[in-house]
Image (tube, rainbow, N blue to C red):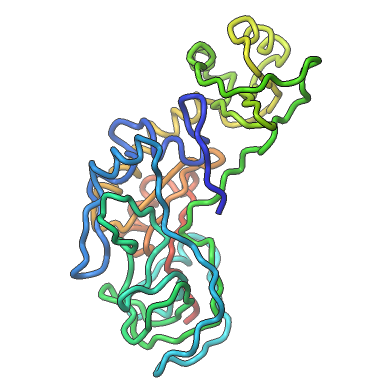
Length: 323
C-alpha cells in the first residue's frame, strides 16, 4: 500500500478530513473506540490523536506470505460470493462470512490503524478464530457471531481491499508542464497565503496538494469552477515558488467538502464515538464518506440509512460469503 503524504498544511482529500481538523465529527481517530474481541478491549483515544497530529501515522502491516499449511480441523473452501449493494453487506448471527488478515493468538486481525500508543499491540481490532495458528496472512470463512467465528474453513489466502484504507489517488508528478526555466529544487512549506486565498474562494477550488519531480516540490491547485487563467494569475501574484494550476471542471470543491463534513461527516463521527459501532476509520472520497468498520450489523446499517446512503461508501472488513 502506498503511504500517503500530506502537504500544504493539509492532507489528501481521501483522509484529510478524517484525520485532521474536524472539531466534533471525524476526529483523527474515534475518541472512544474498542476492539470487538472480548478480553482485548483497548481504547484508541487522545494519545493516538496526538500521535497522528505529529504525522507519525502507523497502519497495520499488510503482508503477502506464501500459502500457509492447513490447520488441523479446518478444511479448504471454494471461492466466496459477496452480495452486491450496501444491504447485502449486513452480517447477522450465524451468517457465513469471509475475511482476510494476519492471525495473532487465535484472533484474525482487521486492517485498522495501529497507533504506537497501544504498546506494541498490532491487533487492536479483530475477531476470535479458535484453532487457527498464527500466520502473516489467512483468508477464513466461518459462521459469524459477536464473540467470534465458528465452523471455520481455511481458504486459499487472498488479500482483500475490504475495510482497508486505500492508497493515494493523487498524481506522483505535477499534472502540468514545467515552466521555461524548469522547476526550482527545494521543499517549500510556507503556503499559507495560497491556502487562505483558496478558502476565501472555496467554491472555485479543490483542496490543494503537492507533488514532486526530482528534488522539486510543486504545489498543485485544481480549479473546479471558473476561469483557470484568471485563477493562475491571481495565485502567481501571491506565490513565487513552484506552482501548477490546472482546470478540473466539476471537481469536488473545498466548499462542497465543508458541507459534506458539516452534515454526513459529523453524523458519522457521532457513530464512531460509540464503541458498539465497530467503525475504526472514515474519510472523504469523491464527494462521499467512506466508512470502514469491522462488520456491518443491522443496527449499524439502520443508522447509516438515517444518515443517507447516497453520501456514504460502506466498507466493512468482514463480509457475507453466501447463504
